Image (cartoon, rainbow, N blue to C red):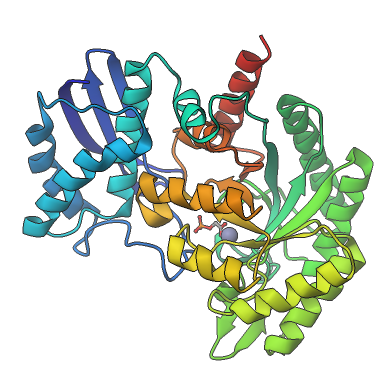
Amino acid sequence: MFVREVMASLVKNSRKKKTVQIELETYEGKFVVSAPSGKSKGKSEVQDYNSKGIEHSLKMLKVFCPMLKHKNFLIKKIEDLKLLVELMKRFEGRYGKFGGNVSYAMESVFLKAAAADNGKELWQFINDEVNGGLKPKMPMPIGNCIGGGVHSGMIKGKKPDFQEFLLIPREKTFSRAVTVNFRAYEDAKELLRKKEKGWRVRRSDEGPWMTSLTNEEVLEILKSVAKKHGLRIGLDIAASSFYERGYYKYKNKELIRDKVDQADYIERLIKKFGIFYVEDGMQEEDFSGFKEILNAIEKNKSKTLIVGDDLTTTNMRLVRRAVSSGAMNAMIVKPNQIGSMIEVKNVVQFCKQHNIVMIFSHRSGETMDDTLADYCVGFGGQFIKTGIYGRERLIKLRRVMEIERELNK
Ligand code: PGA
Ligand code: ZN
């Protein structure tokens, strides 16, 4: 695969913040990838840009990209990104770090071009490598229906302390699941209007409805729409975002919980509302707290997914630790948390070996890029987590639907 040209630029994401976009031209065509951006980030995520900021990363790219011109890359599998990684590392040795968002976008655009060079779509290229080319199983969407936490502004000075209230279909096809989620999301809007005085339509970062109701009040709404549409429900608690010096500080109803109370509270909520999915129920360094929750649900023979996100940050060392200490049975995969597709592949293989359910996830700041969909299908993720509403979210859902149609031809 000969590189004709590589170009870097800055584009705006769904939060109107700048992010990096890389365009690669080969003899097969032009390929583009832009990077998403997190807001409620895990402490162990790689830095997204150079410590001097995104503009500095762009300056570095303006020097680096022309150096790739006319180079030949032979990429038959993910591991073959090594040459590119090596070149970037060498450059970083002289000029400082590009940042995880840059390496994510650069590696991804090279994979896209390599797939085309081999006559394949990106999902196919990856599926051939990690799944021996067997027909992949379609994921189910996890949709953000009602929001709180750091992604959300405030109505009447209040918001739920949990970050995301999620809907999770169980349908025969992905496209049907997307429709069901959207209907339930619309129904949730009507229930919010009824339950909250003076409620008006406002959406937060990933497209979910904003509200000033409490966690439990929102869970009641979620449960009722889920029942009507045959859905499961989930939470991204993002517990680190309200954890301060040993305590979980709840603000909607002012309350402080220590570690034991927090785990106990989560366990009670799981039981009371029949919750299927709980992400980051404890702060990101509390492996034993996660384990306590997982043990409790296993004792009750519950199938609830106990999910690591900030806990694991798609980082092999942390994933190993979480699995060996029995802290989770599922995890979030966000490639730009680690900024290395070789590392993502290693994490995926480890999860498969240990029966850890994988959820490929968007970030709160998203672009019109749909690479996440190909990664989810190609790597064999059981779920893809996005918003239910908003063009940056829908484009990913539509891409999975397109792959589904392709596979059923
Ligand atoms: P982020 O959070 O994209 O803002 O980091 C999303 C999440 O916590 O899942
Ligand atoms: Zn999360």
